Image (tube, rainbow, N blue to C red; front, top):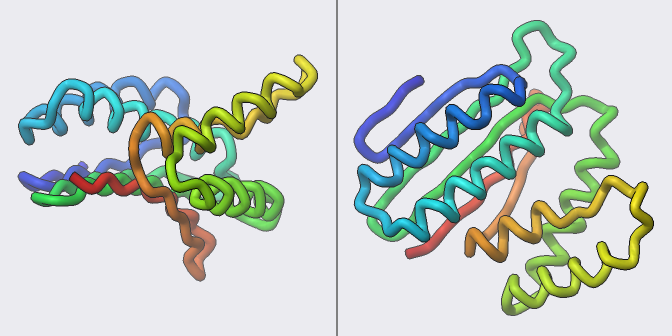
Length: 164
């Protein structure tokens, strides 16, 4: 872990049990910057959702495959970045991620996208586990702009940016 006053950097193993302690640590970090309770809860939710997606969809076949988290707070912008390794088996997941982020951006208000996605999920059969609701929920409830990029060394970084 490398922290400065305005930046928190943490490396985790892709283990579900490591998510909650990091949420608590992030909660304290956000609180130390005087953010409101609602903003803190929203940002912790955003971080948790991005971490859960990272554990669920990352490719950790490489020895010591890890998740890198970076949270940066400036006067006007809060950025959360979650980075994990991927491989060719993730191409369909990346395509869905890209489509979902672009779809959400197509709405002027993420709330509209959230309602539309809820309607779509309600029509799906119960055995269908992929709702696609997480990314839409992050954009709406977290009030963040989402983006992602893949580096040349096959690291996926998903970012969530809150403008204050």
